Image (cartoon, rainbow, N blue to C red; front, top):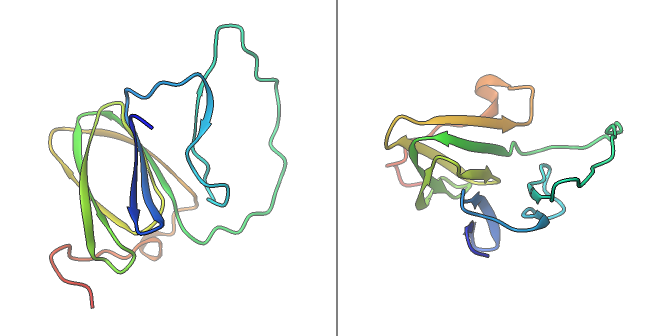
Length: 140
């Protein structure tokens, strides 16, 4: 699909990038059903109604933090890594782009001043939440 980019490590989705130019009528889900965070795009006509609703308490077991990032402005390079910390590839994101980081590792280099809005599961666990690594060291 044009303006949608899946970064993969074999059959595993590492990230889903939705470029700012993406446009489609209706609703479109980008994530597999089993993801702990779902990503969808909606484009509805004037007058379309989503009825008022509340979300019911549903117990969910979340084992991996998924991060959703909206690049509000600027340009950043994203480096993608396998879960074993081996470099996969890089992509450049610009203002208006959106990315869901679903698995593996990632690092960012700001190419120009950049504003990012981040959404992820909480509560944030500090140093227990992530393992930092040197991108230049080959994994064991």
